[in-house]
Length: 97
Image: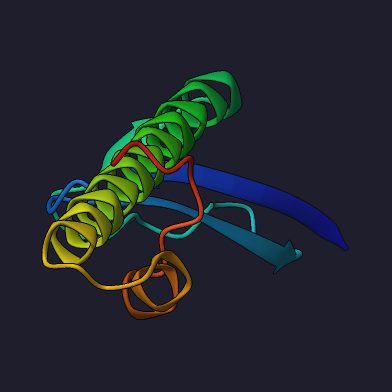
């Protein structure tokens, strides 16, 4: 039995792969509107998606940390003790008040 992997991007822009096994002479047709990719093109596009995802996760983490710091500083400015302000805000950075 032969095995082949098809790599493609769907009409909606989703990266996909399909592995087929069998003795058929022809590979199955790609979904309507799909663009075929080589294995290298697929790997490059997938690495790009992963890099974008990583950058987005990092951005979210930085925003969350900035929000925690702002909450902590507001609590400290309101006279809340440091330990309580840290617990309420989740902030664990240096005390800059």
